[in-house]
Image (cartoon, rainbow, N blue to C red; front, top):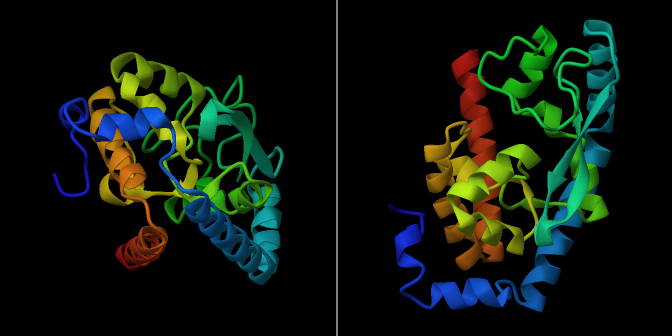
Length: 223
């Protein structure tokens, strides 16, 4: 149970009061998190702009359709925003956009798109979302709207994930990875609640470090 807050433990402790108050981050913590988000995103975008341009060119060569793919997602406060990614699926494979989650070995994904997903390169444009303030570098995953609706019906505590900005990476993503079964969303939620209730700037740095290690591990396994 390390790194998780069991749902059954919430109602019988002070955790519920903290979550219901909606004040899980102090102003100082929020400003520190925002400063890190801006500094990290701008640095990476500027440093890897030529690499991003190369990806855009290869997408146009590999598959018909637009370079970017936009999806309606949910962030802090239940606010809808438009999330941007490099397109990894064939044109018009997801209609209406942002309502159909992908699965492992999804046939809608074209070959180069599969490569982008494997190394999470498709998420590079989300740094623009971070700069805009839609997201944070670290936080609960910004879920598909339909997936979120289903999860909330089974686990009403899912709404507490919206007390902090959605993230490109996060504690739950590192600890659990991709999930697509409703039973797995309970564990995902417990990881996210642990992050929210134990947030610190150093925890964000830890998640970023573990994310980099995970990507390097995937690269070595695929080599």
